[in-house]
Length: 451
Image: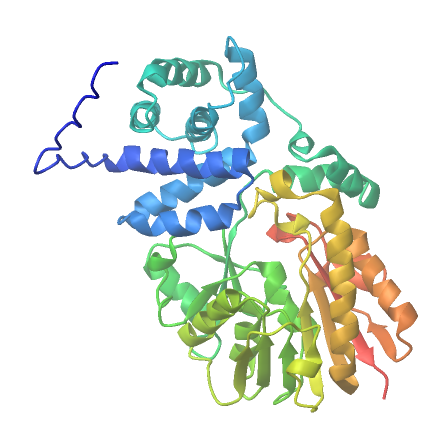
C-alpha cells in the first residue's frame, strides 16, 4: 500500500474571499432565505431577521425583502411556468437553484425590475452559490420568462386545499376576493402618535419629505400609503412620532375603548403596537403587558420605549397569561385586550409563508389555546369591565365560533355590538376580510362582564 501523502501546506496568508457585488449579494441572500422557507419549512421572519443587518445599504435591505415576499406570493405561478420550461424536474439537491429562479421570476414579474440588472445579478448569484454549471440554465430560463411572461393563475391555487375549502365554506361570496387580495402586497399603514403630533400636521411633514399619504375616516390616528417606504425615511420615526401598524390593528384601540386612567391588561402583547396605541391615546392608563416569550416581550419594550411610553404605570412581564396564579396581584382590570394567537389567515399577504407551513391540526390546537386564554383572563376582569377578543384570522372556529362557545359557558359574559366600521357581522363580533378597506383580515368581539 503506498504511503499516505503529506498534508498540503496552507499558505501563510490565505487569500480572502472576494466580496460580492451588492446586487449579487442581495440575490444570494434571497435564494438562501427562500430555500430555507420553501424547502426546509423555516419561518420567513426567523430567516430574514439575521440576514437583513448584514446589508449595510437600506436600499439593499428593502430590495431583499421585496424579492423574497414577491417570490412567495407568486410562487405557484412561477413554479408552474418553470415546470413547463425545464427538461426534467429539479433534483433533491437543487433547492437553492429553484429558490434563485423564484427570486429571478419575482424580479421580472411582480417587481418589474430592469431586465438587464435582474438577469445579470441573478446569473452571477448562481455562481456565488456554487452552481457555476447552472448559470447558463438560470440565464436561459429567466430570458424565456422575460419574453413570454407567466401564465395567469387562480390566486386560490396558492392556498393548500384544506385551507382553501375552509375559507370558501365560511365566506362563499367573498372567498375569491380574499384569495386575490392575499396575493398582493398590502398598503403601508401608519399610526401617528397623537401625544406628539396631530395627524394632519404629520401628514404635512410627510408631504414636505415627498411622501404622499391619505386619511381613512375609520381611523382616528391612521394614514395610508399605497407604496412602501423605508421606516428610516419617515420623519420622526426614531423619536416615536409615527409607527407602522395596519388599519385593522389600529381599530383594536377603538373597539376596546378603555375609560380614562383605566387598569388594562394586554394579555398577549407582542410586538406591542396595540399597547403603544392605547398609551398614546391615554398616558394615564395603568397597563400590564404580558407575553410568554421573553424575546417577544423585549420587542414590546422597544416599541414602548421608542414612543416614550414606558413609565411607572406600565409593567411588562414574561409570563403565560393562562397561569394567573403565578403573576396576578389580585386586583381586577377595568379592560382586557386579548389579541389571541391564531392561524394568521387574515395576514397572508404580510406573512406568505403561512400557506406553506400551516397544517390542519394547527387550527384545533389554536382553538384550544384561545379557549384557555379566554377562560383564564375573564375572572381577572371587574364587574362591568370590557374584554376585547381579537385575532388576525378569518376562520369562524377561531372567531365567531370561539366567542359563541365562550358565551355559552360563561353566564356573566355578554357581547356588546360593534358598528359596521369594524367589518361584517359575524355572530357576536365583527369580521373584516383580507383586503377590505385596504386592511388586513381581523376579528373583534367586545364582551362585557355583568355587574
